[in-house]
Length: 154
Image 1 (cartoon, helix red, strand yellow):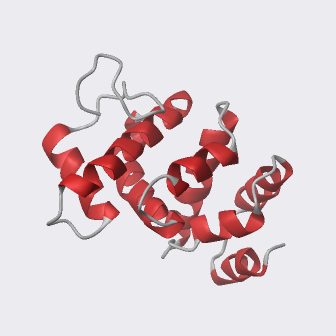
Image 2 (cartoon, rainbow, N blue to C red):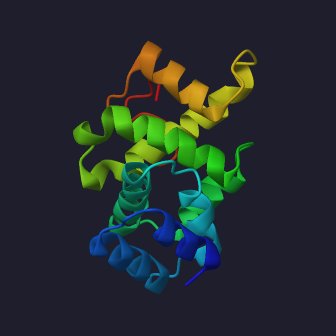
């Protein structure tokens, strides 16, 4: 196991399900270093399990780890920034986002990342996501490319 994943497992009292999910993600080809970077933003066991669930849901619904990595690589934000933004989003909207719509939620985050360059007063990706949710909400119709099915906001 990756040393950072090992230290996270030692730091937090994780459920066997979380350990199994990590193993399953690595069998699906996710880079353990990438997964560790994604999970590093977690401050609590609940955050860690939420981030694990989010990435697992994304991969279970036809996306690949490479898709998430591509979204991150094409944005000005780091893996940790994306994890922090995902925590904000899924803590607020998680119950209203069915598992099969997880890719759409990442489309929304992609749109937020693209919008960030137009919002110079906001310093972090997390703040951009918070503002976008406050002002525009989330209707669940964003595609995994960040545009809505009806051409409106994300």
